[in-house]
Amino acid sequence: MLGSTCTDCELPASLVKFPIIPADGACGETNCTGLANYYIRDDGLTLNPDGAYYYLPSNTSFAQAEGCELNTDIQGFLCSRTDIAVLQFESISKDYDQRAVWPVTLSYDLAKWVTVVNAPKKWDNFNRMARFAALLITGKVYELTFSAQPPGDMRLQLQQKTNIASTTTDYVVLNITYKIPNVALRVSISEVKQNPLLTSDTSTSAADFYSTCGANKYFQQNGTLSVVVTSSPTCEVRVKIVSSIIASTTIATDLSSFEANGGTTSFITAVAKFLNITEDRVIVTSVKNGSTIIDYYITESVTSTVETSTTESTDLTQTYTDLTQLADTIQTTITSMDTNGLGSVVGSSTTVNVVNTDGTTFTPATETTA
Image 1 (tube, rainbow, N blue to C red):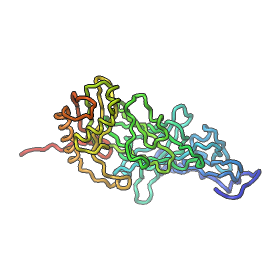
Image 2: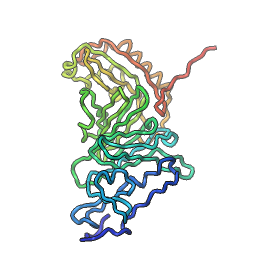
Image 3: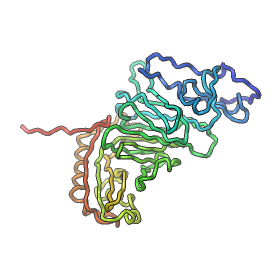
Image 4: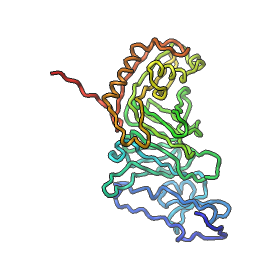
């Protein structure tokens, strides 16, 4: 809100008054939450000429716990802090309006609140879409938990950052756990045209790269992806479950020599050249001693964008055939691969995992003969 500066003013109820969200059952057993997850910025005019206030709906679960003051006139909270933002995230999978993944909970470690967000209610002849908005505090590591398997393809973005005049980039780290085994994920972003996966150092956390949009680390042992979303206007993060080859290759060298000779970067280049595929399809998830063991995925080729993902048409049988051929090549001839000086390949193991839209495993039809 912009206008003339006011001194010693009181907030008139007519200026801002948040609606009370009706419990009408239109969003199922959990109330509709869209009207509880936005704020209004009063840019130093009505109550505080030297600063800014932010008005939040009264049923925002974290407002009181985070030091905001309840104001009954506006049926909401007054907040003078500058680290509030809105996380927007939605399914862009083919089943975006067919599969219920809500309600969704959001909380950070040691927080005194848990935000529960719901999908919009159904309008006319349209199905409910898996589209969400959640108020949060920036600079925290959150657990983003869906009530079912997370969307197979989704995008995330921070909107309405409160400290808009600041040159510092706000961020959140989101931990998303996938409830199926052997899931392979591709993270793509509009700000950096690559997958900034953190792999070499097992102690590295995505939170250590808070200024990097899309920085991520996948913990294969428990199916959790940790990913950074920043307040940069160009930071839109896409997370997609993909069909893949789950592979592990052993190279006859110690880990320090492996890193000194180019490490995962050289390995990715070597594998892509050997299989005649693009480097973005090779995703390393871990590197371990003994000699050096590299765990990685070879993903399917992804051609869809966030604009075309909901109408994507994929021949899963052909995907299975293509990945199986690549897996056979790895199994039978990878010991001859030129590793760019990393060392000789001792051996490899592979498993082909083709997934349906909802993340479940695709099983090809069994051929029968008369």
